[in-house]
Amino acid sequence: MGTFSAWHWIIVLVIVLLLFGRGKIPELMGDVAKGIKSFKKGMTEEDDKMKTVEHNADEPVSSTKSSAEQKS
Image (cartoon, rainbow, N blue to C red; front, side):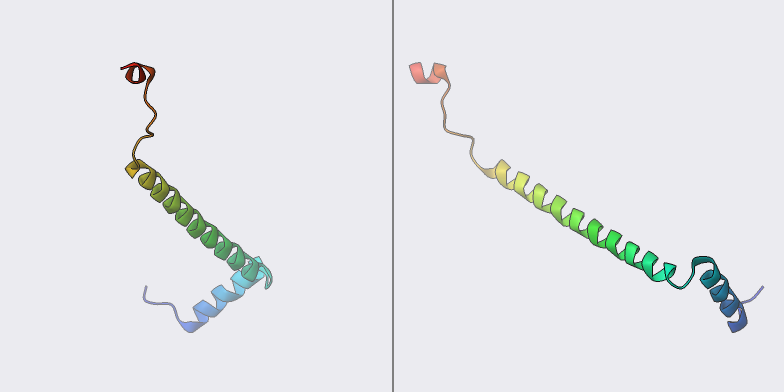
């Protein structure tokens, strides 16, 4: 079979441009970029939440005593 020549790639590029149009491809790439940015933002928010939970786990339990302990 071999590799594709330059003519094969030109024909594929023309077909892609005919199917999607000139304006559709940049719009599609913009949507992909927005998706990646929102994914990264979601991952950092999740990391922040996990750090907060871990931090709260290290803090001592509140110092209120139960009613049985107060009577003693």
